[in-house]
Image 1 (cartoon, rainbow, N blue to C red):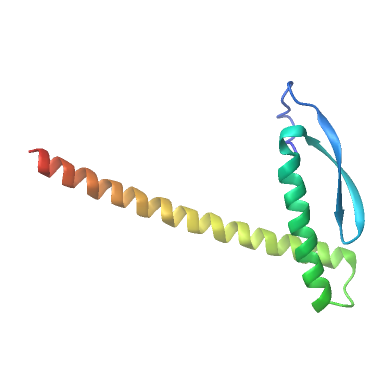
Image 2: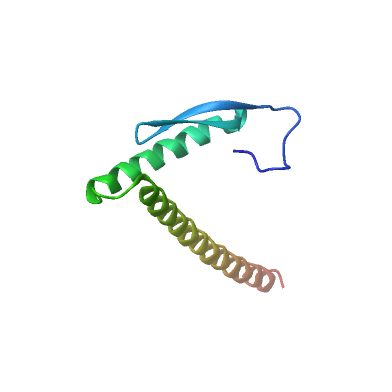
Length: 105
């Protein structure tokens, strides 16, 4: 799951078997990223199984697209939430700085 062109010479990619909807896939992954890859695969498998129960006639491609869209939506929502929290922290930090400056003078 390494970013292309960003290989770490100290770690080599090894194939890791992941199972999604009872299909096995071998994914090249650096040793330090294997736990994250396996967790992501378990999460994806669980989400696709949930979807399969509500979309009985859908193909594997449709499951994959819907799971990817759901994951992308969740990621973007979390990024927006994180940005809002970061802005709130910056505003709080500015208030604290002003209060500190006022109390020191």
